[in-house]
Length: 90
Image (spheres, helix red, strand yellow):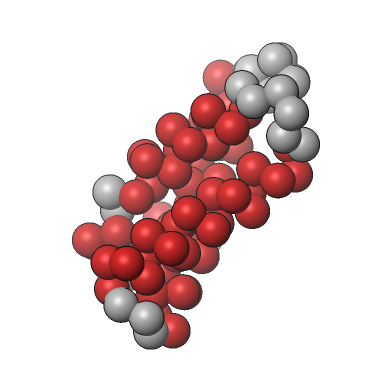
């Protein structure tokens, strides 16, 4: 899948959420009482709520929130695998 394909699906006004959600993922990773499987759900919830507040209560906002959350989680995984810190600090 090309990056242009993802860029065509996501509204350009939502790009600002990707680094914000990445930072939230990094902070959640440092929280000892949260299980790692909950991180994606928390980020998706924050993303969907943010898109609802920005675009209004329409189905397009929900889809935008899911896509932005998915891209930020994918970005985090790609960065951590590339750097090689995936198994550390878990």
